[in-house]
Image (tube, rainbow, N blue to C red; front, side):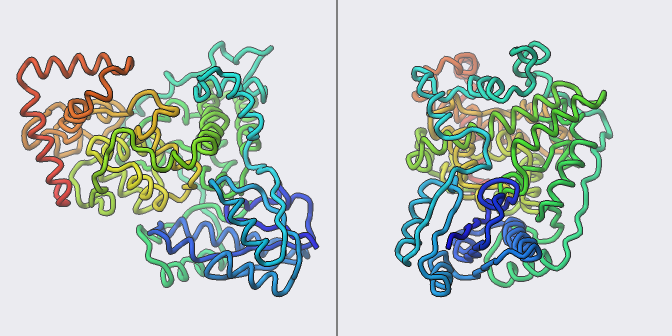
Length: 504
């Protein structure tokens, strides 16, 4: 007999093998993965509760569901094949590098067979991406080129083959500052039944986690995910675009969709969310083009691009460290009270409380600070992977090791390093911070500033020749010529020392 094996990030009845109404379905809830690192308890609650809810729904529809709770996939498969010897299992190809081969070996060792089919949770197939990349003549990893190609392939936001509005990308209109006293719409609340409380208590008792288990508000059923999508379209899509890159001290989500977790475990699919957003844009007079284009770019462009960069660059990508950054991750990443920096403390606090911050806080606050401090890309990657509810290895690794840490030049052409000026421009954090964003030296100077200039000086041999870094190195030369660089680097040493001691 053939049974569909459903992994914890493939929880879809609308796509993949479950859409074919199989007679038997296998779930293996393997607790071993949750012991490998300190995960956020809300991440574990989301995955395990969503798995159990889907199993309940399938049983209610008369499907033969085998739900093995075991220490490992190996133990779960032992139990399954003891009861169902010789079965064939069919599974969507996991996005995690090497997972399909490891799972096939486990199944074969137990006398079964594993058939791996294409993963329907993405828009662009591996073959299509590889064909596109091979035609790029050495420029395989241009995100902008890929995004435009995907728009042409899908027809999204095109008019007679040209981009709607005349531009492919409205990123310049996605950097506005919300007005004073701006309040984003409230988020939807979900009725969870018994599964979420049950799983939350089990996670608390069973695993060594990091973060706040309370305040859980994530979709764990298909119905929850559909409601979350509708709520975003009705209440936040219109202002998502202009405030996409903004950061506010008193608003952790602004107008972001918060759909990434549901997408990455399979409760939603990329095609349906993008087409629903475009339909809302077509039908509503309130949704501007730069809002829907920004959302399409995140899902159709960046999400798909990360999947394939990861697929093609692993396993080397995970260990990449071209700047040879080796410092341990700072205590403040585990304790938001370990710093008085308003932006960093808020971003870490949001991860601690909710397992989430939006993309600019991830890149330009959390990753930027680790980059300037000199943290190992692998240490930062481990923290992101464990701490975020929407984290999957295929998306976290290229984002953190590549974009956030500049650990590889495979698809990034410059480090995303910035001083306090960026945070001050894009947020209201600095107004309430004890550190001065305009000062570089002195006890009250924002740590971002001295670390930024010290980073550029320390990495000069690696970065000065980069054509995108010419302007910033001319500014570094000015500081060196003015005799300021020595004091700046002394301040950077003091900042690193205090940060390492948990007293910044």
